Amino acid sequence: MKGVITYIVCVLALPTYFSQAQHTPTLEKGVADFSKYNFTENGPVSLAGEWELYMSQLISPQDFQTLGRQAFDFVDFPSAWNASSGSQNFGFATYRLNLILPRQHLLAIQLPHCYSAYTLWANDETIAKNGVVATTREQSVPQWLPTTVNLPNEHDTISLVLQISNFNHAIGGIREAITLGTREDMRLRESISLTGTIILVSALTLLFIISFFVSALYKSRAVLLFSLLCLGWGVREAFSNYYLAIHYMPDFPWEVAVKIEYISLFAVMIITMLFVASLFKEDVSRIFKYLFCFCNVVFVLIAAFLEASIFTQFLPVYLSFAALLIAYILYVLVRAVVYERQGVWLIVACLFLGVIIFSYDLIAYQGVATFSPMIISIGYLTMFILLAIALLFQVGIFKRSAATNLLTYEDLYGGNSSM
Image (cartoon, rainbow, N blue to C red; front, top):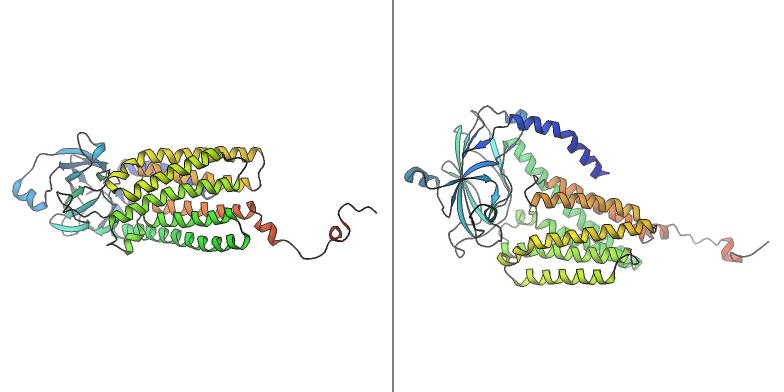
């Protein structure tokens, strides 16, 4: 139901979105003129468009003033380096955008994580940084931590200079857009994202604890696997998307954090396969189950023992592999519906929502849609709650709780007794 509501809201919001898009200035040739744009009435804008790109150069604002204009290209921002013409995933670069803003503005920008370290200047002032940007792997320090920072309001013209270096990930550059809006709006967006992630991780932790004790009480393999699924997805949410764990532990080793992010994904896929197989034993192929689990174990070992710069190259392959699991689960559910397995309709509902949210997560990762932590948090939380309810029916816990100790006629005389 929540998935349907979200879809309806998005559809109803489309006319407003396109109306706003018609009045939003475009970024062309490294310049964005927002002098006539009302941020209070029209809301935040994405700084996606043509930025200046100085590949294999780290240029500071002071360098631009003393050295003048260097050789550069205009590129669509954001974009990964390995998706740009003639660029490499390992290296360093400088982006620049000139903003023309309304007078007496009080604006802020929301920055996603970059691959894999960045420093951002507004005119001559450093306003944000993740890790240490450098020209060599030995000197650079990667870090992923989305943040929101205020723009200085002394001038109505601001030059944004963004330095990025990457020697640790298969993707270089930046894949999500920077957002500009009023300070109040940007702080609210940050608070909503952080709060939503905290609620999701906390709820998954609580579901893990409750379902673990229920599995011990009822000796249910399916409930035990569900508890592990809650734990695995909770860990992944803490180390991905909004990177909640890094917010509270900013010095956490980046390499370890990336390993946790990937290994938790592979582990969740294994648990999901075993979980579905435990619910629908007659419908899941044992060959597919063990083959899929074996392949995921291989991915776990690769991520555990190889550096992130190597094992992250396999993510596009793995996303296709994960899509195979979704397709197979849908096939299993169709069989379960046809053969009228117990509790299947609730499982179909939660899985349908899961497919919608996972698909949105996937296309946002590919840069096709804008990533929203709140949509992810609400969607996954709803899915897990529905799954927990469906599981109670599936394993018969509700039925057991309704049992009575009173003797019945059948207990005393047998069900086949005749008068």
